Image (tube, rainbow, N blue to C red):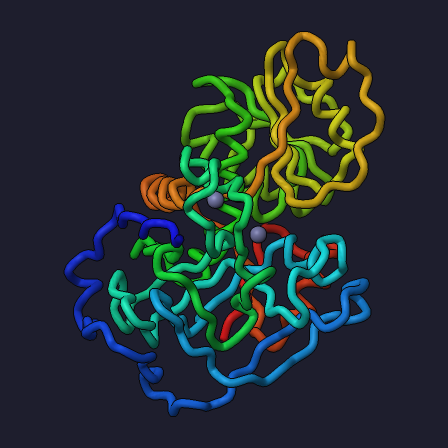
Length: 372
Ligand SMILES: [Zn+2]
Ligand SMILES: [Zn+2]
């Protein structure tokens, strides 16, 4: 059984609907606007996992995908580059399907509707994120924790993602995007923003409290903005001069190196860097009863912990696993309200391997976004 369609919480403004054509629900897939059926599309696929400098991604041409029941086909405008794409390409994350197309921060326009798809109109802008499907019936879905679904499917891991001219999405898992954000600045919100927001909630910092952020990439730089808008004191501990400079520019209360001691005890912390050796460092920085949330899907080995110095006094260590659609809707609403703005670096889609290599080698700060 499919999950019930997620109720839209944001309606398009009148101006945004001008020019959109709401098509009747069709019994078969609708050809793309202005595109002949069967035209090939360019994609990037994970060909053979390996070090990014050995170019594990390969350019591929395939037919435009046809939307199934309840699905949208999205003509990709932009796709953000997430560290998960790098873990997948390099084999840290085992591929769940051969030759999958990565990319789960997709912004594009609906250009075909599958049978029964009526939540979005042809031409409407949508976002496609990491959580692609859940079963809707397992004990976790039933209690509102669909991020823990026992049979989830993820965009760019199980299902072809946005390193492509087009991709498919179940309409119940697509997002409406705030009009205030252009495509390039909306893309990083769809994973970096959403996961960071969930991690921030998991870190459970009380109002006015002190948050530590370890690592300062795409997700962290968005999360820091939300935390600052919420009135938290934010201490950023990261490597990389560019990252430290960005943290300072965004208004962090202090900025230091990853192994530095935060200037005050932390009421909560988020580990964004995929570096297990920072777990004990961050735990030691916590005040009594505080939580360290590990935001990444992959982490290098955690060294042995010292119970007295790193966990006792009710300090907590927890992971953050995917997100619910509600997390996504909340993050997008906050991004609009607080005018959260990603610092982005644009690459043409044809340069996806270069973008991933630059991410691997810390050659930019903020978020890389691929453009078609
Ligand atoms: Zn489930
Ligand atoms: Zn991601």
